[in-house]
Amino acid sequence: MKKLLIPCLILFSIIVHSQTTLYFKDTVSNKPSSYVMVLNENEEIIGTSNEDGEIYFDEGVKLTSRLFLESIFYERRELLISEIKNNTTILLIPLVNLLDEVEIENKKKYLVLTAYYRIYNTVDGVLQSFFDYEIKYVIKKNSIQRIVLNNRIFDTISNENYKKDKRPFWRSDLKKKSLFVRLNSNYHLINDSEDGVINIVDKKTKEVYGTVKRELNINNQSNILVYLEKEYENSIGIAREEYNNEDLLKTTIKDLKHSSRTSIRTVTPKYIKISPSLKGKEKIVTKKERFIQSVEYVTKEEYKKILKMGYKDVSVSHYTKEFWKNLETFTPLDSLIEKQLNTILVERK
Image (tube, rainbow, N blue to C red):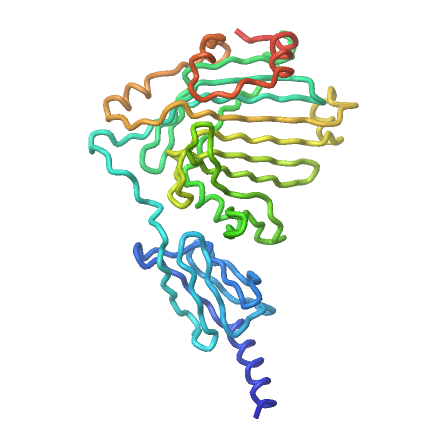
């Protein structure tokens, strides 16, 4: 009997993973549950639901008698493979509704983040350019408008080549989606209760690229820190974000305090072809940082006034050293970078 049972189970597994499609839905919103991981009894991730909450078991999937559904958004659920049928909808209970926002007066419905943003580039440790800005990000439903109030531009380009070169003026945009929605769409987010962190794991390579964790700041308040480091061809990308909220799952854009992106690139013939001055150089580093100064809700009238702020002439510098002193959230530049800023670069006015 046992000999007959084993081939039957093998045949059943083949039928299931070659023909079965499952759908995951949120019990509260009734919307598809995206990026839910399916694990077997060996804790191996055998699939992840797509944006439509759908998962299809391909041939070769390592199925076991029990499957487990995991997501940092939903309660863990166990499925018996003997009970799985094709086109079944599985309902998941959310741990928290990420779309819940603090109620505000109907009149004040526009969220505004005021930020100080800076970007600088070095080649083999020598500063090549430095830009900084004061920016207001106005968030209305799913759209984000960016109003630049002030900026400074420093670089090493000669006056003759400056206009010809048409230098790019980077002004960072905010992401519309919340932190966890963005991470969860690209990576597996796996709780590590032992270390008290959420590991950011690549879906294909299964490599851990970073962590999400709580950390006390200088005011003894608990913040969320996201750190992500990923190697690409001839380059390394490092991202760090800090959120003023101790609840990992409720963290949204309004809690953002500081973010930075660092790109470390090895000089290749491709770069030298674009910029011959890079010949003989080894490394290009670009660092972008954003410091949120204030978060507020404004009325429609106040919103209209903000839209009229700013200016069009990017060649005019409006910042002074006094401005930096008035920033509430700000990390001074590295002393070597600041020294080069004052001695090597030319300010464009």
